[in-house]
Image (cartoon, rainbow, N blue to C red; front, side, top):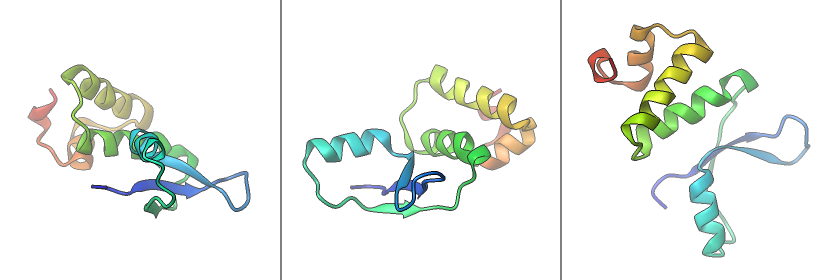
Length: 98
């Protein structure tokens, strides 16, 4: 596997983890009947879940231009990012998305 899944400790179920990023990878690994799946356990708060998932997808996935634009729009709207802050968070020049 190229990149491990990202999980966090489940906020309500003791001893369980909640998937933050990597849903398609998880489905593929289950189809291949993997018994052990590498994960990164991150301390991610509820209000940071959307941001973490969107940033991971933007930086890793082959998104269509429309999917990428929607992800940027969500980060601007949901997290109150400025254009400069968004450019900093995604590691791209502001002209990339405007």
